[in-house]
Length: 420
Image (cartoon, rainbow, N blue to C red; front, side, top):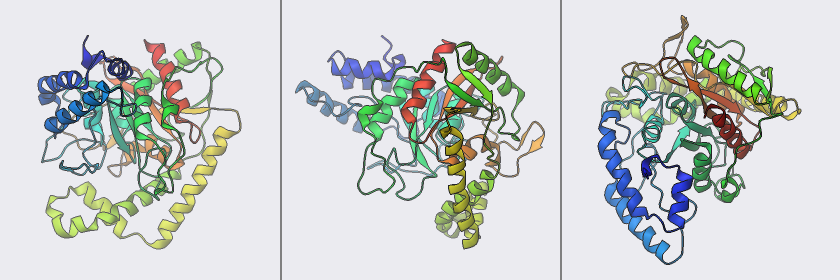
């Protein structure tokens, strides 16, 4: 058995059946990292000694008949901007994965291209078989974009499902995995109530275990190729059109429809900039080390007035209500649209400056198919929709009802079966 190609749910079963030890699995993972990681640069800090010690403790615990939750013995990569005890933490911004400290991370489908970002290391590592799954954080698109670029499942969770910022629903943490059941398994280990966080949802972790594909016959899908006004590359549209035909053949009731979301662009720009203003000290103390796009975003935040922020917060609430109403009237269960408006691009290119000849004004404008969905505060999953003629992956984004994270993963599992 190739342990690095085995689904996480099967690895978990083997460990609980005492047919596989955490130490054996870790040894296979470390060997794979040693073999493959130099070519893609997905893992920049390898905590092998800490992992080995943890695996030994977990194996001793398993020998006593006790297991440490649903992720017992499974190796994971933690996004580098998450605070980790005893491990260096660095910063990520934008939907590319590069910096002068570590160099660029490369896409396993084509190492000349980016895996997206800012959870690009997570996606590249999972796609290359270095780890069974990984967490990611998503503000504009940072779980969904890299999942799409690397042919994976990536879930932007309902705010509060995974503990995070106590008062801000814009940025969330979610799973990246090769399959929807694997993503659900990781989510079971990530979620849970927290009395210290007012946005924490009461979802039970075991509610994400045992995921099965949803029946597609009769599934009511609102479909939009462009949310009404977004430029999308023709190669992306072609793959998604074929995916739509497969869904219709499977019995989905697909209708061209989408709520108005163009006003989400200004809301997102303002609220993102307001968050960035909290890093003004970086400009004061280390401006020569801050890339131009981040400096622009911080300065934009510092320059905001209270009236602008208040208007954006009011718009945020209105867009949530509008989107909730769109899915709540019974006509549609999900909205389907492109995850990313473009294909993976050269790793030397920092951000997409134009799509189909239409200029992108800022480094986040090319991500509007995701950032508009962020403002709705609804969960969204990127699921592999197929490959282009050149063999590059394209993701289909499905946006579900508030709190319907498991249901989205069930639908994602069913759509992946259509291509298998």
